[in-house]
Length: 205
Image (cartoon, rainbow, N blue to C red; front, side, top):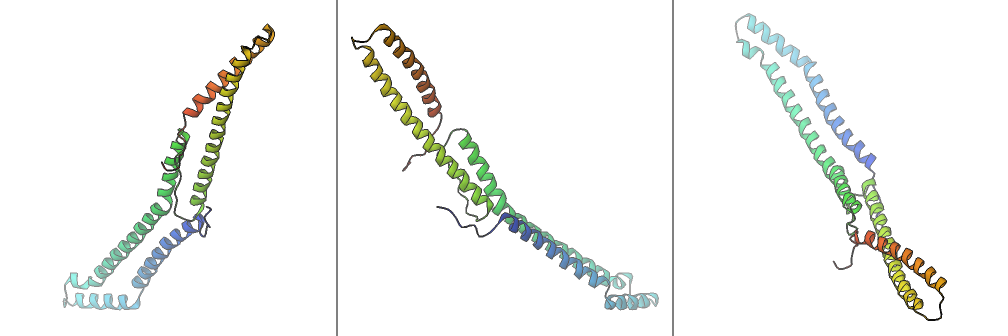
């Protein structure tokens, strides 16, 4: 059954980068507003005047700067949290399905046609997974057809063997049938070995 692809990988990537950019912009704007605020300047000037009159200590005079530093550290932590969340979403939505398809494709390439790609996300990765599944299904049908050819070939060889023994055939016919039988037998044997190298999906397995 085909899935309806409501989202796209490109749109998902854009959303992830927009989230990171939005969080970084908010932090940057907040920091710029705090450092250029008139209130901060007034407080620092007052503290410096009081410090010059020995009314307060140096640590107390620079308290607004330390508060601003602590706020900047908090904002950076918030950005890091947002980045970590976006990274986990990226891994869940993109990296894990892609790794699953790579592993499944490797097993299919090795001859295990019982493998299928199961992607729950509705984007290009899911579409690619369905294409791989269709390709595997078509390959299974081709192999089943090859098996039928092998069976028919064996029956033909058996019939030829019976005709060979017919007393009414001359030496030329016998020689021709023997040559054809030998060539067909080699092809059937080779095709049988190729088919045996694949593990075909079986219903109810």
